[in-house]
Image (cartoon, rainbow over all chains, first blue to last red; front, side):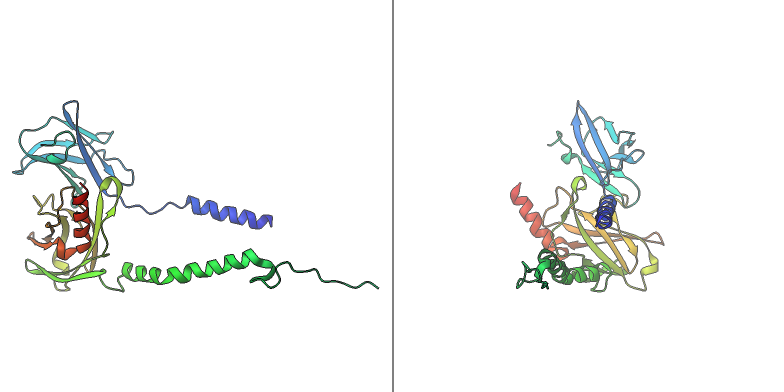
Amino acid sequence: MRRRILALAAGLAAACLASPARAHYPYCTCAMENGQIVCRGGFSDGTGAEGVTLDVISYDEEILVPGKFGPDSTVHFERPAGEFYVLFDAGPGHVVEVDWRDIDGLAP
Amino acid sequence: MSTVRPKANPHAGLPGGRHGWRFHLSVLLLIIPISAGPRFFRDEALFFGDSGLGQRELGMKAVGPWHVSVAEYTADAPIDQGLAGHMKTFAIRWSPEDADRIKASYFRIGKPRSLRAAGVVLSGSPYRQTVDVPIPERAVPDDELWLTVEGWDGAVHQTAIPLAEASPATVAWLKERGEMR
């Protein structure tokens, strides 16, 4: 009986230790904070975005602010003039776009 | 001389006899896989491609000189993926004569601004590639699903599929989201 209980407990422990497979979608959210735009990025499995490129690009495809995420997975920049979008670029096909109209606190 | 009297079985006459709860548990352990079985095998067939490219096949589409079969992987509404937003899965299959000419393919809802922002890259073999396409915050039911394809020769071609054709479930979901806002 004792052996059975131990086997059951071991089985439950193994089930609890098994980590589920998780996708790692990139994400990026931007908001106005203290007069600056702050973008936070990362991946949905909890990985940070340190070193990932974040460019602020005008609607006519001119790079206004080239940047990279810092160790805290944020990028700070002044609001550029005109219409623009923020591109989180973790490599070809691993991008997230944030339109200036979707930046919290910057709504037209 | 003493006589041996058998002990009375309190569960006599009940299903499972004196192993009552264990009997019911074993019945439950049979019912669960039997009832979940058809769904499991349907999902497995979809996952391994035995039941086709996806639940809703859209047929062959031309992308410049190339041809591709497109399918909605599951005919359901987009799935909430937390911070990354809602995702909708699509699958494609390149025609055998084009398969080795394709470098990369990208899906995006709405026309891409540039090749750099072409959307999410499809992954898998040329004969079965899948992608989880994010649904933009500003997506509307009249939007289109854009497929951007880059060939090994450097050529880039695009095609657009109306969302109403690509995924009626997503259109219904977008209408519902629009009404709630």
